[in-house]
Amino acid sequence: MTQQAGGEGGRQGLFTSVKNTLATLLTIGRTRFELLVVELEEEKLRLMSLWSKAIAAAFLLSVGVIMAIFCLAVVFWEHRVLVFGLFAALFIVSALLLVASLKRQVGEPRKLFRNSLGELETDIALLRRDREQAPE
Image (cartoon, rainbow, N blue to C red; front, top):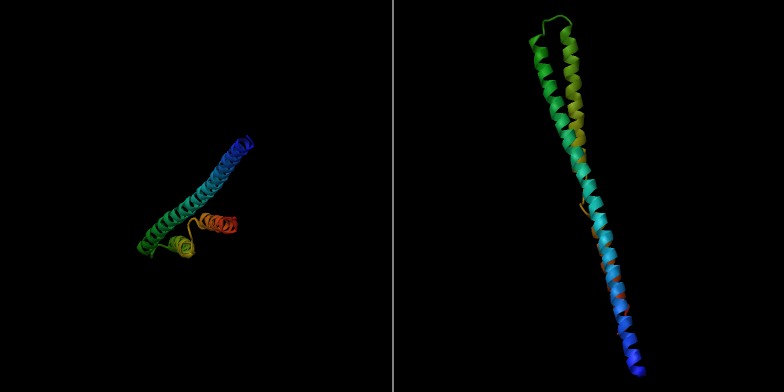
């Protein structure tokens, strides 16, 4: 009878251990999924920033070109030319600054899911270490 009680206790200990392991794996998976979602949100915001700067640069450059052409059309019209020319230059310089900002932002190295992959590598290393240290 002692063997039977020990056998059942061993089974219960095994099931408890399996449940704890599954719970730990689910918790790790959930944490990794949450990190993945955060990184996706950051990438979405980055792309929205890039698109808004590109649209603003295109708009300002278009307005600057139109103003420059209008400035050439009225070149002999007293002092209005200077005003139109200054605004054209302002729009063109603004567009060029935005384009430079876009180039700098696009040129930055961006590794998508860097944090998630790093955490997964850490988890794998810990699991390997635990497996190697486990008594056989």
